[in-house]
Image 1: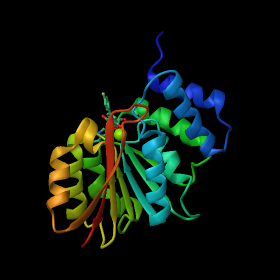
Image 2: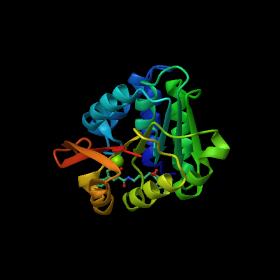
Image 3: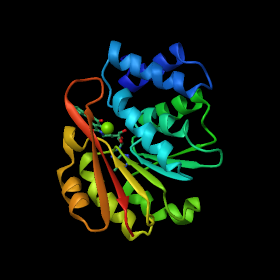
Length: 214
Ligand SMILES: Cc1ncnc2c1ncn2[C@@H]1O[C@H](/C=C/CNC(=O)c2cc(-c3ccc(F)cc3)cc(O)c2O)[C@@H](O)[C@H]1O
Ligand SMILES: [Mg+2]
């Protein structure tokens, strides 16, 4: 029977990466995507920008929207301080199952909590279910038409504090026009565009970093 792309990506990790070594997991996925099959991971070029933001923010609490195969989950978690928590939301059970195995291979199971379900359902439950006050960093990389509604929902649920950072992938390609328009014109955010390229291609894409001003 035919395998799926996430299954083939996981097989490449298990073949080429060292157990317990997150950077080798990241490298194995990038190699797979460059040499074998493109996949919608944030990738190595935008990944370096992601790394620099994570390092600068040094977050104690991180929320990722859209785990997919956990490439960015592993990339972020490998840079977190000892007691930091990363919660990642994924509603496709197949993708979640693959992501759990990638996270386990990287040895980051104790830093990452993968929650299966839709962001819109789980964001309102974050405080009570996960003892979260606010998120220091949110990485948006799920369906592009969910960036804006979920950002408004996080505001309403009091999950952002003065200084919380939102980092959004794909603001050019595939594009998130309604999110960009909102976040760049809202007096409650200070935004900065990091120009880059769509993962593993020469197509323009970029990350939008926004600071919540309270
Ligand atoms: C509301 C909700 N709740 C929970 N999980 C959710 C969720 N919405 C989606 N998910 C999950 O997250 C992933 C989906 C990611 C969507 N990402 C993209 O579509 C994407 C596409 C490209 C791309 C660019 C050029 C092309 F020609 C083709 C594709 C590049 C990218 O970097 C992308 O991120 C996927 O695992 C999905 O199950
Ligand atoms: Mg993306």
